[in-house]
Length: 424
Image 1 (cartoon, rainbow, N blue to C red):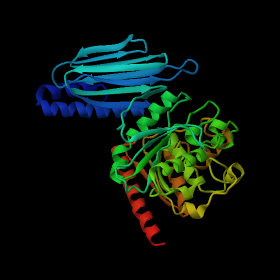
Image 2 (tube, rainbow, N blue to C red; image 1 turned 180 degrees about the horizontal axis):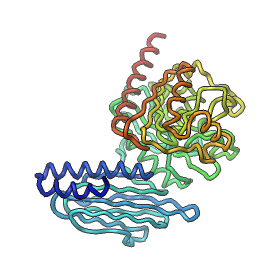
Image 3 (tube, rainbow, N blue to C red; image 1 turned 60 degrees about the vertical axis):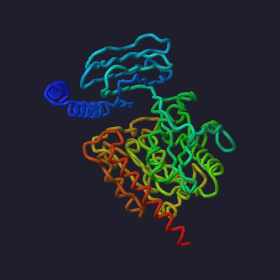
Image 4 (cartoon, helix red, strand yellow; image 1 turned 90 degrees about the vertical axis):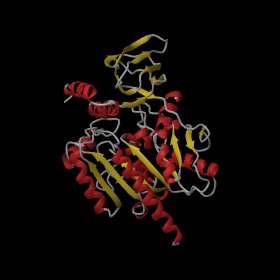
């Protein structure tokens, strides 16, 4: 299929009008994006560009060991020529070409710093793909965005998007997830800004404010997944990031006004999906609804048969309080994943112990997809308000259908929450 795409598009460009040719390129961009996601690219960005010059910034994190970065650049125009140029931190040329269409793929060790991809010439479509310790730059309305420095109860900054309406009563929390180790504030800020930028449209339709923390991810503690180490570490700056997040939430509520309730919406995918599911288990009284996407190969089970993070048997030993299943049954949980998603953190020691891995593989299945129905049955047995949904043909990504379903789940939870409040 991959080799046939350029031939198919060439035929469409030759025999179709400008509108149909443009549609063909848009479809090719989508298909190429899906292929990169299935190859494990952690950053993909589709672009529709006009004849006006446009640039995209990428920030490369300091490498750990002999780490390399894979970059794919593809741009094409239905007519005319597009020029593409990628430069490094010192302004040196990394890649580039000029023509009606072109693609470059390279693998190399990239020096840390800012890389710029400049696109000009004809209007068209493009795709940037990166596999490595890289984040992009995203834009958010500066009049609504604020960054808040560490204060009482939290050691790291957070970003806050003010709601469009002064009547907002709910806060949406999106745990940050860089996808790699970093304590660099510029990288954390860029990653958190992109997390927030992707949620603005949904937040405005729901009428909510948005909070994104800027937690680091260290070699010792997988904070972004709220791992077991995140609950036990004695390092003050990253200790109990779940409690730090609660302090951020309450700080944001004090800024936004008394109308913002203590129970939040929370949405996460991959590592931050794990964080979201685990946070909801630990603090159900603070969560109205949680959207838990592809949570690291195994969503924490509401069962005392296994220890954290497989289950909740020893949560009291780790945190000082048992999981309140009664409160958890009042939380709307939406768990989702694609049936082509092979992203599995269970075999990795920063997420699960070797004993945890052996248990999960034997008791629940060898792959995230194989474990899905087992997890569903455990949530049903605990009588939780949980919906599990698997999406055909989707790999490790949030598809448009997933995004729509997350928004619908939040909208329903907000209505249910408002009705519950009015009945008391």
